[in-house]
Amino acid sequence: NSSSVAKSSSKPYGKIELSLNNVLLPEDKLMNTPSRLDGMEPDTETDLRVLGCELIQTAGILLKLPQVAMATGQVLFQRFYYSKSFVRHSMDTTAMACVCLASKIEEAPRRIRDVVNVFHHIRQVNAQKPITPMVLDQHYIALKTQVIKAERRVLKELGFCVHVKHPHKLIVMYLQVLGFEKNKSFMQLSWNYMNDALRSDVFMRYDPETVACACIYLSARCMGICLPKNPSWYGLFQVTETQILDVCRRILLLYKRTKVNADELEKKVEELKKQYQESKLKSRGRVSGTNTPNSSNSPSRNNHSEKNRSESRSRSNSRSPSRKRSKAHSRGRSRSAERRNKKHRRRSYSQSPSPPRHTRKHSRERSKYRSRSRSPGTRSGLALAVA
Image: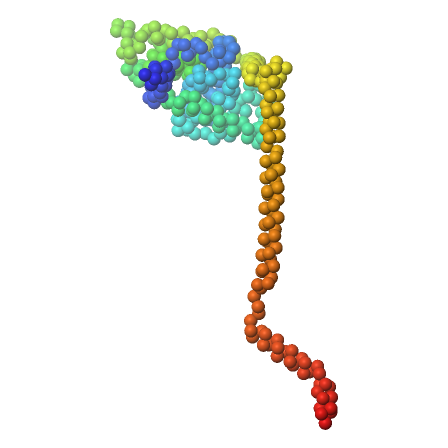
């Protein structure tokens, strides 16, 4: 019974599926983004997304990346900020990480130092400052490590599902089916709408087939080209008219937006960062205040401490004679051990090994020779007395 209750109360397991289809997000995920939960306005978030995609596109052109790699970087950038907040993660560092990662995915890798130098150049141009090369100092090394960490973070948050199916090839195929493969201006305009659509959230909402049909629909309306209606041409590609109109509306909204001011956006993000850090510090202070009660408001605790002190004193007094006995016993043992050591030393001196016999004989012979050589007069005196 307990195991069945635990299974029913536990949350369902969230699995990761690796597929060749693009990842589409539900409506609640698209509306309640982490940036909005941190207090950011929807317009500010949209401006940051547009600015980040523009940075990736410009950097890709300077790095001479293929268009597919630039499109992959922009899609990864959009996906990441539906999982993380602009307030907690820097937009510039994440854009650099997405360029590095996209270049590896599309098999056109670029070095991290080249990516960092290109973004440094873009900042100087946008700020209208004199263009100077980046100095290889501690700031450069720190920025390089931040880009490496951001690349790992993007991979982790996306669950390593970094495959992106782009509709650029689909546009060419669909125009060939419709009989407009020789109309290069029609194809180029559809391609341009596709590149602009990367700055919106249509790739998070719809399949690439729907986005390709919407770009063809927009370019046909602009150029005044008639497409078949009976039957409808988009039905051949399993796309509905409502989906096409919604994608077209979201793409056209990009052209109505005012030009993004990077300095104002940075100021807004910095203010939100300060507010976030202050709220974080306040929450920590509340937790520490609840965990550490005041000494003045805890009389029961003081009473318990006094009782514990008195008990410890009584225990120490009761144990004092036993300690004295143990000390006296230990002193007696140490004295007896010293006496034994002295006896052992005496025995060792008395039982020292005697020198070998041949040494004794040599010593006796030496003493005889010495006595003979030292007393010649005594023998002569004895001889005279006998005579």
